[in-house]
Length: 217
Image (cartoon, rainbow, N blue to C red; front, side, top):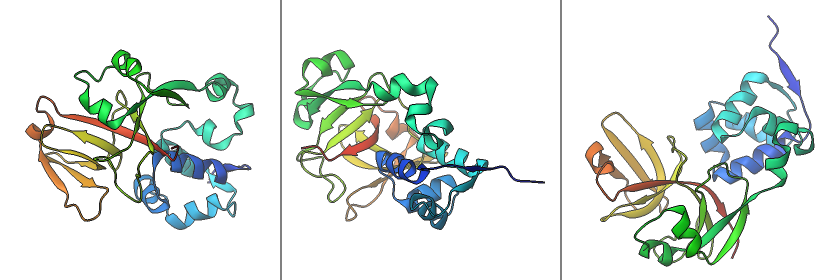
């Protein structure tokens, strides 16, 4: 039985770009996709261009993009051409301003935004937060970085999230198990937070997916 292989150009650059958008290292992408880190490194350095269709599908699914967007040049993806060339302008709000808002709904965020920033996100309620004191996790998140928040996009294991509650505010990787949720803060010195089901479902608790860290300001 022949395994279908696809030959393409430029996939390494696109793979590296989408991986960066997710804030994933090659090792993290490997763990989540089941593709070896060595293979990912070869693809990104254009040393491996004939790829199995299954490999491409796993990488695309893990990165949250369509297979066509990963393997084809944007100019020839007709069904995605408009959305690719016309980004949404999202509200950009300061962290201290965001914390002070009683409601985190899109209309109020737009009213209190400092500016707007383009993005290709498919989340209609997405917005950017400008990182400042209380939201810094160097070296990954520094003062003035833009965090793309996708409140309507459900997070998956290993995703970077912003966890908000009356007792805890932190950026970290989230892992969900039947009886608990584990939050690993980006700050290595901070211990993991082990949360029970009732802790995650308490009133006032919000878990927001962070899909991009943009070095803007």
